[in-house]
Amino acid sequence: MSNPNSPMQLSVYPTEQIESCSGNRLITHMKFSRVNADIQSQSVSPVGVLSSIDPASLPSNRLFVVNITEVLDVGHFWGFPADEASLEKQRLLTGEINKRTLSPVTVSLYPNLLCLAPYSESSEQCLYYRAKILHMRGNTVEVFFLDFGNTAVVSCSSLRELPSDLLSHPFQAQEFQVVEMCPSSQSIILGNRWSSRARNCFMILVKDQSVIVSLFSILYGVMRVEVFINVESKKTSVVDILVKEGYAVKTDENFDSQQIHETLMTLYKDMEKGTYVPISASSSWKEHEKEEKELIDSLLAHFSKSTPSGSKVCLKGPLSPYKINFHSLSRKIYCRTASVDKTSINSMALNENPHFKYLRMLVAASVSVNSTGTRILLRDTSLLPDIPGLPGLVMMLFTPVMELRTNEERTSYTGALLGLGFNSQTEEAILPENDIELAFDVKFDVEDITEINALRVAINRLLCNGPSSTLHLGSDKINQQQEDCRDRLTRLFMRSPPREAVPPLYYEKPGKWNQVDPSLKMSIAEPGGGNTRGVLFQLHPVILLN
Image 1 (cartoon, helix red, strand yellow):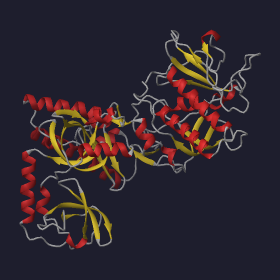
Image 2: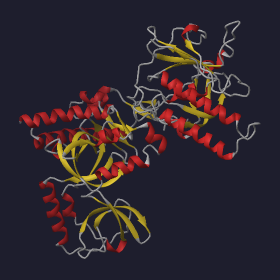
Image 3: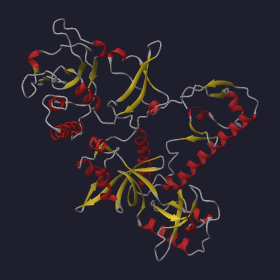
Image 4: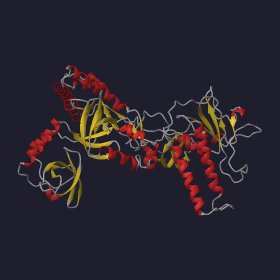
């Protein structure tokens, strides 16, 4: 919506005029209210921290048992409460459904239609459960069981109508997501976000199991929880197991989830003290929301029917705080605005984790400059994986020359100057406009530089001993060297434990080469002698740290 050139306009009215049309109702508090505007249904509704939470529907205790029925991905699953009261509700509801005479569905089938469906047609006792149609597949449909959370494919003829009185019972199935966890570099590189090994590990731990969950927050209708299983009669966090296996890393929850968590904790504390009654609080909360909704609707109806007397303003945006802005790392175009072509999928790239402090990296196959030279346009772009320290690793690996920066105490590397180096006689940069001054946002150490040099050696050997060289070693040897390069590359990105995040420390003399005392440089000689003819990468000198 922010990309089209045609401006979007809103009618704006003076505050006094709006107040006079509110029927003497107090609307001052609505001046700063947030609302959801649904363009499809042409409706507007108020938004609040608890707008997605009904206090009456909260579990009585933050810790409760869940039967997991459907695993969608690592840390993402469907299930239903397995306490005795919930199970009894399910038994009574199932008995009520199956003692009735059920009628076949008479309306045309379509996705999201609520109905009754058998869980297993081949079963001797064919029991029906409340379900929702997900997909149409010829003479069969895929249904989602609303009280259990699993799916099945059944024939269209087996579906039955859902009596309206059975809709009054709340659906038991609930969607869950594990908190404070994200994929490790290993999972990202070996899979699509999560590797197959990570998925298999999670499935083995929780599939068709009863697990203990601790409610953290409820975000967009999804319960965000900590999950615990019994390992050798000891309660163990599933996140701890995935982290130990190298499939995941611990991380902070996003801002929205943390905000709702604080509100929920206050609610549960009040419930424990007996100072909060969920039913009465829920009814007052719903009443307040209903009053606000009625007021908004009446004002909208009034102004949509009356002769326009307000002014028109053009909307800017919409703008999202999650939108990613890009800038070049090259000094030549560092201050110019970088825009992704509007036809690209990355023209509206969003950062799902804005609380993460490290840099992301975008690469473009085509770069052009506008006529005034103030803006660069990127085409055929790829947003690289969300791996901490990835920009630094990529640039240190492929830069021709690198000079490391350290803090004043020389206890850690803070960044690097990357480019073609400097002229030893004039001490001027060879190609300053294309140099990159990079401040590290994760902690790199001597071991990282050593691994980068080892990979550069492996690439040099591959190129020198390849098919075009005079030392052609045969396809088997080349395949072996290629495999060695791949292994070293993935190990470099998949370091365990992950590199520690650090606040960037910007160098006081950006772009200046030859800032290191030569006595502190540990020169690295490539194995095999000093013959550098035909070698692509020279090795980076390591600066000694205190």
